[in-house]
Length: 212
Image (cartoon, rainbow, N blue to C red; front, top):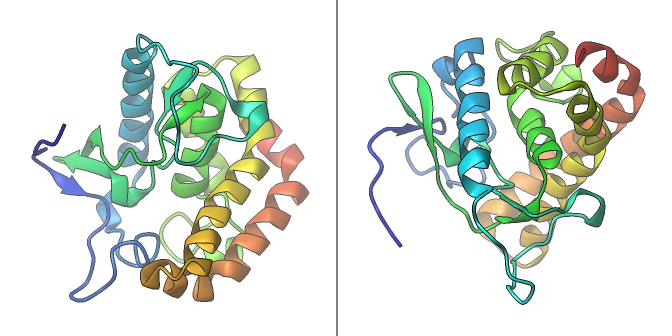
């Protein structure tokens, strides 16, 4: 089913910029990088999960890219809440679009993926906007606003390394398959995802501390 959602994507491409290849870089406007915007993303995900929990999955349904086994569950998660896939209205997230990667997952998995994009959970040298130096506090803000309990917070931290690997693998695989926009993104961001992987492993204790 197709429909129109009034609002603005948190990704605003420059003229001629490939949609996917630029979605995570300098085309995210300042208003989408605020704590207020982050809180609204957390609320949107919580509301989506509440509604999606009523959907009963069938064993024989095929999914484009299954969630890693440890993080699968009965909840059909979006799995790609990057700025290009979040619609805002008056500075607040109101809708998710582009459900091609949706598949049975878990709340912990979804929040880990969201944190990678929105905190963001990257090496500090790769954060060049207003979020620099604030990844850990924004990680906590995401979990606080969602209303995560202690067990969920622990699971989100555990899922972060796999979430980063999931995101980078999607881009790498599409690049290998010849997708022009993904190829452009992978050529400039492969090292960034490798550094993010190392950062997540090195800062696990910091993430645990920040999540509480």
